Length: 577
Ligand code: DGT
Ligand code: CA
Ligand code: CA
Ligand code: ZN
Image (cartoon, rainbow, N blue to C red; front, top):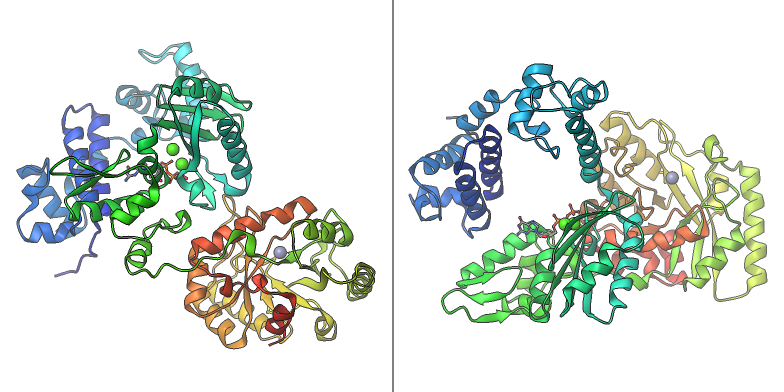
């Protein structure tokens, strides 16, 4: 028999959720509800659904009758569901997508598909713009306009936003709400509180005894372009940037439970709920309570919920169900690097290459942040678009840095450096004699992103074999929301880096954050040390460092794993060794 990959409960549930969606599109009544209910139950039961099925206990799951039980059985055995396939075939291509547009239900989607041959949202937009939608039965000019507006909205809503762009906006809203007399506690929640690299929408939580007043202020904040939903406990708005912001107001006694719930992640919450169910308790967005007696066990503060479940409080950055719950049970959570613990920035550009401020200006701004050192890492010559430095210009820059350091005296040090380019063959675009004189050599890939994995991997490994290279800059080259990482075998790179003592960069620039959280954790498993660099191109960018620290925290890193939490003396020893 062919072996079928074992599906997780979440994957089984996802298949049932899709059945529910398609039945709904077909206009079937009641059944979608039944499928959703079962899917939700499967998401949360503490046991592997395959075990439940094997022991013939599927009917113990609320809502599961004979017909759904058979379907679950089929999913577990084959990894697929013929019924779902037939539903998919019944509906013309694109119809499920069309129903995601506001104002288009199943009926209209089917008409658009049948009469105009529309297969996608792009098709629909073209047809509406050409005025071909208004003449369909039951449509009209107004509906056509609404459809275009709905398409616009769904495009904005589907877009994610960079953490680095959203955080200041979020903190401003948080400040404005905290300042209100009628507001007690306020916290940012959701993926933003977890400091995920991109954010879908912003979730904010507050306590108040006068929710209407809070909602009024929230709905009229500067920058709000539309109010999507307005109620006493939840209001949703869209900002001019297209970012949706949800505010929920709860009572003091429920604040901890709500904060825990709305911080997520969903996967973390599901795992936590299983712990509650195992004790015959129930964890909801309102409270942790005893199922039998209804007694409230915790809910006022978040730590109390974790504590009641036998866990130490888990920092939000770790809440992705990647082993943090097991670690908290064992008292083995990592001692995460703190936001204020970075002592210097190891990747800074200046006006000498593509930056906007002088060496002194960058140094002054870094000093104001409390740093002890920065490394000036302008590009080398072959990066023409970035006005890279020739060896002669770099020598001039080194003299300039020496002069500034001497004039400034002790307390703050500017390190000389480069962000040199790793050529297609792994060669570095500066002579060894020049590299040897620099304090910090960052080497990065800036071209030839399409190389096959084997070549790219060999290329970066070859660069690491240059004894002068200290750090590999933005090691996967991704640009968030726009460019995929290049193909590279990071495990192979990390293995070599571990033997050679080369550092991997966490580039804190909001669009990069590369290494990613998951890769940071892999690097830690290899025993690597990492370096944080803001890649600042102007002095304000130095503040991006906090997003790099967030990524390090999400990657389970401690201060020890990151070299620029060390004093300059210790750092120099790491760079030399
Ligand atoms: P995002 O907005 O896509 O960046 O991600 P989140 O994590 O902010 O997700 P969002 O805004 O949909 O919901 C906020 C939190 O609410 C989420 O992290 C956990 C909780 N939550 C939302 N939906 C569910 C759900 O279906 N089940 C569970 N257990 N929790 C949920
Ligand atoms: Ca969110
Ligand atoms: Ca949300
Ligand atoms: Zn670069």
